[in-house]
Length: 222
Ligand SMILES: *Cc1c(COP(=O)(O)O)cnc(C)c1O
Image (cartoon, rainbow, N blue to C red; front, side):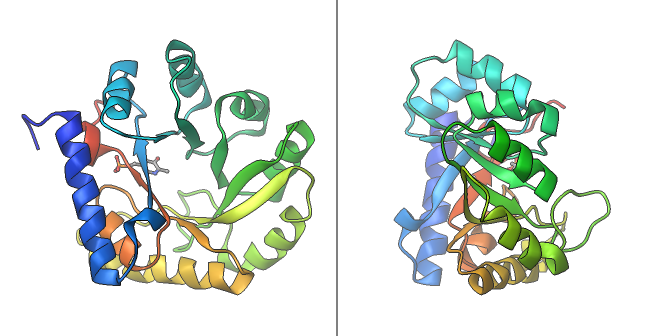
């Protein structure tokens, strides 16, 4: 990976997405690649966008706000992918066009109250029930979805998950499969799942949004 430019790595990720789609009999246009720039500066964002990135992912409101300000006029969609505190919702709505990490009814209520226009969101699900992770539990998903989908100015687009850390991406295939089944059960068609270590498996299991950082930008310093 070293020695390659962001543009070359982005192209390589796109080729891997296309190959995974091919294996799964899917159209690559069904998969949105979100370039995750957290921990990297505005130059990295500029380079990725110059190389064709259309969607940028960030996990902190403040960091994203600063980048967006410096990149004013750049025509990209900003995706919030990290845990969102209710006291940051107002700022988040200014910075992001879509929120992947809605993990509670309380957060949804705050978004609903603050939003001036409909906000597309994914509901984050903690599929493996990991104590260290945020996200709705599978057994509370139905009820949460019923409540959230009725809220004003919130549009639930689909489900999102962060798979457990694994040595082999095959180990997390069941996690993605469970999320896809849960989405189907709710009549939702969009799935935000898959990162650097597992995006190909996620695509094979139906991901419509993959969130890829390191494979494009290299290892993060922090
Ligand atoms: C950092 C992050 C990513 C990207 O992870 P990489 O391993 O760098 O591809 C994706 N999703 C979430 C929620 C993240 O926090």
